[in-house]
Length: 171
Image 1 (tube, rainbow, N blue to C red):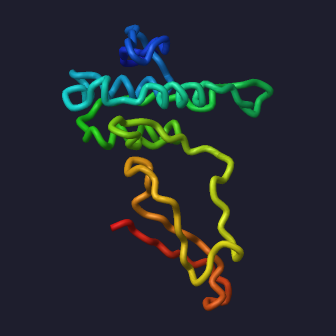
Image 2: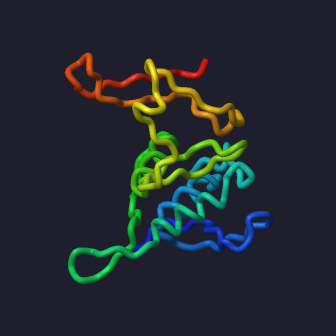
């Protein structure tokens, strides 16, 4: 049984996007459709200009990758088949869709974009050679891409090498 039909971006142009009215089980399509739908979603608050379409496309492609289904076949990495038949807060619906596709909605400049929860090459390596007296520094970057909180887990010798966490918040 197919569910709600959304306006699905055809992925041809980010500057003049075209949409098709169709059904999709892809979490990226479901989230974009929900965010933009003025009747059943958050379209009165979020518009097309508020979304970073490139990150939605990347997430869609990630969700559509075929993986081993454990029965000598393949399946898409992530699909959604949710039923929204009760009144729910918009943030709860958004969270449910994001969780289904292992992603987060994040600010990318002045737009909302997608950050996929996936294995990546580490961007920083911290060790005894570059940390002294638990001090960490970083180069100043643009406000939109600078973290506002950094947490570091480490084996603390004072706690018999149990894992300890230090969190620093940007003021």
